[in-house]
Image (tube, rainbow, N blue to C red):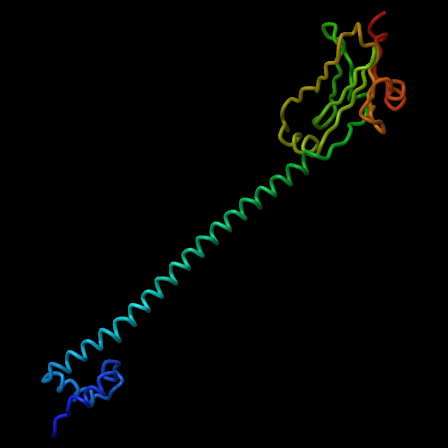
Length: 218
């Protein structure tokens, strides 16, 4: 069998390096490379040029893709964490506002209120059910206007937390009995502007007189 010359081998080398030849052709090429140092070197150079860069490019692409994916996952984790924190804060804030912001006046019931003079001071006591959220008072010339409010927290949550405990009556201290002659209870500022001075008669008309000094002093 005649030997294949270098020109033919040179044409076959690209296919040989890519592994795209039959077994018979591969055997012929390898027999020639074993005897021809020049063609062998050409094949080795071709393998470096064609094979290695392909693998390096793929590896670089895979590495770049993985890095991008890691960054994307990290961003998603941070975004998810931020959304969770913000969502939790919104729920907590919304719950807080729903339990504390709405308020309503506690109506006057004679059995729930009492007025006493202690150490010369007029004091109002509330012993009804539920807690008190706020107290509002206006000091007139010799009378005092007062009302209490509650919100969902003081009305529904506090009683559950304090269940089984001895409840102390709510105490509101006003002023000296020598100066205060009358105590009124009710929403005294209803329908009025912020300035209440000089409107005591109007406030007395829309509230209830719950105590007078004549009751305790001759």
